[in-house]
Image (cartoon, rainbow, N blue to C red; front, side, top):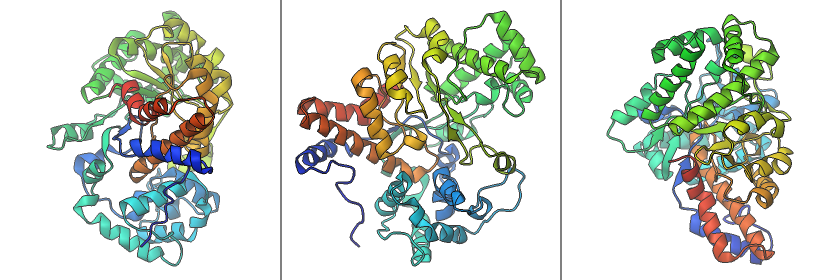
Length: 469
């Protein structure tokens, strides 16, 4: 079958600039993938079992896919998304796949469509548009592939040319899957990242119980302020032993604080009692970002901050299915004032690496690029989440490059739970960056030899350097 993927997709439309973009892309398309910020399951690589079926690979774990289907009235139960209460959901992968196939038109012109087409064609050799007519045939084709050793997680990891990938775990995770990977005879580089939201957010469900567990795991009295901070240091060191090079912080706002020990301790004790007001909870989260930045200066972990998501917007969905089920919505975010307390403490230290993300594109040119363009500790993470798209990536470059340059950004990361979308996402980023660089060449703003160097840096070197991989 002839492939459906346009080899010149995402390149400029005028032939001369397109030819330049194509030439740049040819030099970077096969570079190894550095995936320093993501949410794939380390159990996949530890056990190396076959993926159960096409639906559980492509639909049920991918909130980009099931949120679109949900928007058209298909229940999460019908798509196999597990309920928090263990209630009944669809387990027949073929039925789930048929819903997806019958509604494939919903994904026209979306990034998900591009990622899915790439995965179906490049990984599984399926070159038709998945639709109602071929729903069963496409399911059977992919299902048959999944029975073969070449389609197990470790084989795909190698096939995707992944040099390093980071998963994301809570401090309360014992990292048993990472231990199993380390003790195996496989040499794939899978590291963890320290995601402490459950034990720094007073509004997180079960916060007090989480702190008790943190103290038990760390061997510290974590209900005292000093013991609590030491417990974090202990767990960060444990995560570093399993390859962690970064911490990851998903707060509602970018607020930071630099409170006195007495004030911080008072807030902490209120948090343990469940008596913090929303304002006090936000202040505590903000202070903990500054504490984590100071710890990063001690242990070298890169500090990632990605605020600005109204998480779990639907109360009924949160109750029925739990967190991270596609109902996280972008909000307006202030960075200039919000980050100042932390930056006054650590922002001028070049040994620290703070990577900022946003879901508020209006902040790129006005706030984020100027901040990253002057503070040694700051770098800009790539276009992220809802803007991890061709147009989002293009806007990111256009709004940040003039003020922050290329070298105050950190290349690309895919931030995905959908394993087979990883090579597709990196391919999109490389194509978009090459198209942008070709435009700079065509308009006399960048020499071609410099553009080749930048293309390599954006595709590979900057992510490896920024995340210390």
